[in-house]
Image (cartoon, rainbow, N blue to C red):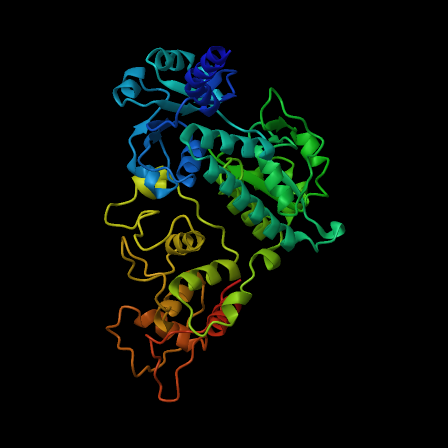
Length: 469
């Protein structure tokens, strides 16, 4: 009897390692219908979709990402990786020795031969692309499973949901009767909008907008839905805001929308409430979807989403804080990076989006800093340093106001502490001559003096009031 018990125990002990190994293995079904079994985290990953790349970096990966798709611009580290394309030969991929290639359904359908060659070479190919926000959470978890970052994926979901709660507080008090009705264009040439369950419409509704095309349906399992010009024009009197996504499939321009036959009957077009938003922050399943929600909120309800109250109590405003104040007060659209225009084609001597070594591109300030820099609001810009924590000076504010606003001619004024040889003399004299920024009793401008939040707000407001309509 004892021998039988010992034999049974021995068998259990022998089986235990394999049982534990099976228990450690995880699996899921990808969008191609393949069961993906994960024995251990993948360590050499090529991503062929910008959303995959963003999310991998958000999970805390870095060296594991050995290749990305062309035209990637965010996060800035993505631009330092070798580029791959589904148009490339399989041999290029194989030569880099990846253990995982992440694709999306469009690639799986259109380039099945490439996928097959990679699989035959022993490379795991996974097709993922969520269509709804609920699917997005599941998608992040799958990326976590693939990379051994399941805890980080859970944190991403928590952080995203916390961001949604903040937005909810901003729109909570808006009466239903005062909520803006929006037509959200997906593809202008085909008169297509987004399906009600899409990520883009989720962003619109979360920001407090009412989707005018709620009665449309998606075709062939996509997020895009046909609506038709007649259908759009049937809501002409109701559409408060015309919002258009700009991306590869829709090169949206305000002028084109204005000149579309029959569109002058649309309330939003007549009133000039046409806005373009980058598809990378409203249609991609990444953490930047929160940026898209806020950007739509800034379009629909600027007073609620452009709150500068925290800055008003500051005795000294930093350069980063000034950038945010200016962008919010003037409700300037946030700049989203584009590899071809902002990075690849920009002169090597100039600052390129993401180049600042002293700016945190995983934080919140960078969006306002880069937007202000691309708007030309800061003088004497360094390619690599922004100095976000340094106080903003009176001279720098004078420059920003002069560059942004179409100010009238100013009377000449004698300024004791600013010589004509000063590179910012003309800008400073213009602001002083228009009584936007005043001299002290001694006739001095004090160009290097710091400013409080209230002073910054006052100067921007005065410049706005005096600028040409």
